[in-house]
Image (tube, rainbow, N blue to C red; front, side, top):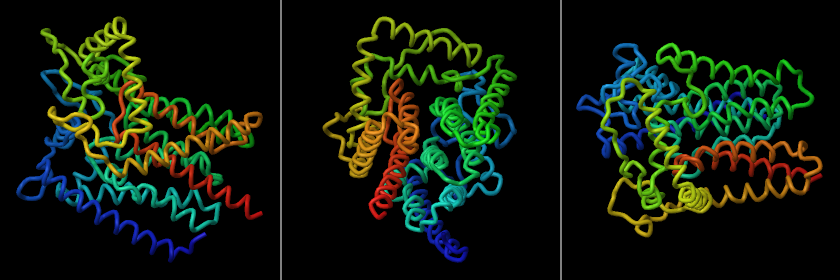
Length: 421
């Protein structure tokens, strides 16, 4: 495929570009969010998306919990981001080092996973095309090099999962097992993918020994059990599915709200007013149950309104090209500027869906022979379902956008190969 010397040269250029981009991102991010102190050390408690208190406590005491409004939360965040940042913090607290080193780790994994999964295709152009997918569209790249929300990891590992599923490498089940294990600990929106994909592998992969193709299922079960045991040991309840994070019901209450349509997608849902209870919660599960009951009551009496809001979400997912989630109450949807990266993302995203559905429809009698299309549509549905139930922002859609680009690249490759015969 590629000689070791040339592979090393490509890798150096690739990582140098990623590192420089990460440095520029860190500089601009610091200017806006005051992420470091006067000694260039990261201010851990300033980490957003509820990571600050958790990672600070983890770093200084080794305890995986944070106290919010007097409640001890063990399960407010899954551990992939906290432990990745903890590992880097233990090496250095220098802000620029953290952002650059995080991206060196993640993009190195992406680079060599791609090389290993594509080595059987023996196609240099295919390899180059796939490794530049996370960096080719500016906004998608910006999400991937971020470090303060989970979608930066999903933007890398979900495409790798798809790549492992369509790969011809005999070790692809080991790769898919590892990726599924990682994805489970990134964000609860990955639950359906981690739960269902292993069963589809068992059904789909006819010519593989049963032990080998059950590795992804065993990996998924192990991940579910480990997080479940941690939750049960510390809180008395086994986190599973929607209860995988104990603040999920509170987050969902922004969607199950009559004001949702007045904010989404142009304004941040964080701005939506949520009524606070007068009573004091004794545990994170009391907190979860309160908002869970509140959400069910909303659905009971406002189901038609909720279904109308789904139309808003679908319109944004497939056609939204304006900047979304602006943290300002003074904007309307018409005031939000166009995000030009989204034009390209949505075009390729919709094109890949159209092509894959056309191929599946054309070959409906032999649908299991359409491996790429089958896995792509399944991942698409499983990935979008939590965002249709909840809500989708542009950063939530980066991962599936990258998956769609990989699908298109392979479709073009196969089309070119078939026409050249």
